Length: 294
Length: 237
Image 1: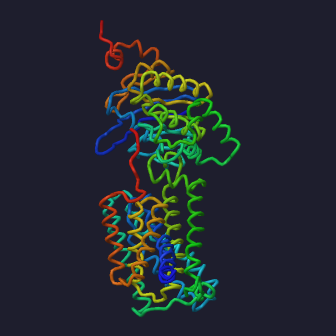
Image 2 (image 1 turned 90 degrees about the vertical axis):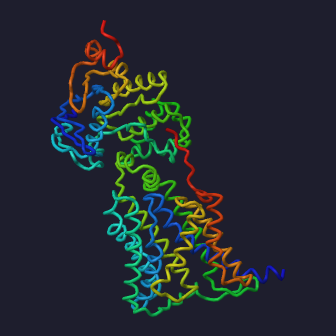
Image 3 (image 1 turned 180 degrees about the vertical axis):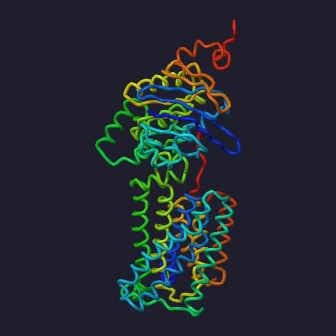
């Protein structure tokens, strides 16, 4: 019982962090699945979502500003794709990748300009930022809410992809642009939809994340973005269940290591885990196995 | 009627199609035969909008469709069964058919076409829940045809449906092509298997290095000495 009591808060924190990583990781994995592009700007979209909440909260009540910021992040994702990736659709993949890095720096520098480099603080959101007690462990309510929100959103997303017309089109486009076009699928709309969905989920993840860690700086998206990317690769990039499971594993392991008193090594651990997994399973846990027949 | 006049297409730096004119009258099967690199596939890809033409004209029922976007050409009732089948291997058979009907919204009409496709290819019905990537080559070809039919096309263009299939399967596919045609779908068929193609075709064209060198009813071309020698593998006697 003693062991359980000591580690429970870390386990809870791990599940919660895992959920937040999962929401970001889906954006990486979906974009990769369709465009074979690693959207380096995704972590910065996550940061922008937080800044939008902070700035809009000074004019609007929170119950308006949070949804507004989430929608605005979706629009931001759409705009990024149109500006930075669509013109490079037929260019070599490396060009789009470099455009992604450029977009990442652009967003960071815009944020630096807007905030003046000062750390901004995320407004406490009533109810979800409150402290609660579970089995004797003190934590914020967001810790409990995160996994629930994550699971609900993922079930919704998976249903969209599995059962709706746009979902089938997404899967078709991810396999074969040209033939999908022959069916009348407008690939640009499908790609835009992917970016919008990824950004909306990152915005939700951002709300949950910063309710816990309230300081927002222009580069704050870097580490969670990188961890979520690692989670996506770990689970097999392109696979949504893979990204989610990878994110939870990374979130939980990272926090348990903190619980053991090795906080310094928790980030290093994530990357070591990635290296080990890639050594033995180069396509990740649920990576695409090529089963095509000629 | 699908009509192509004086079409020129350059593709990857070469003039793949040099002034082709042909007509595909409603309700007929028209075939185009020719060796590798004659420009057959390029022609079909240009009609469906995947490749941009340099000059000329492509009309369907008098309406110009050359260099329009792919979706609007698809809406005009032109479907392509691509070379190498290109079924979506990560989608189930049923989902492949569903995406074939992507531009249509009338559920009842779509259901009728599901039933029709499943009647034409009972094998697909048995496997409707299977991933298309797990089907055999012949089944994938059936699925590619079924998927094209789901858009309820006026003209169905087929790019080498016999490619890499066993002779018995090829025969089945051709008898189904006949059946689809009898149901009122116009067919433009490209083949290297000249024997099969000329047999079913009402009208046939022979393509060499981007130009049409012969034109006539299918049965007539089968008797043509040049065609016999070049495409049917029969020596001059």
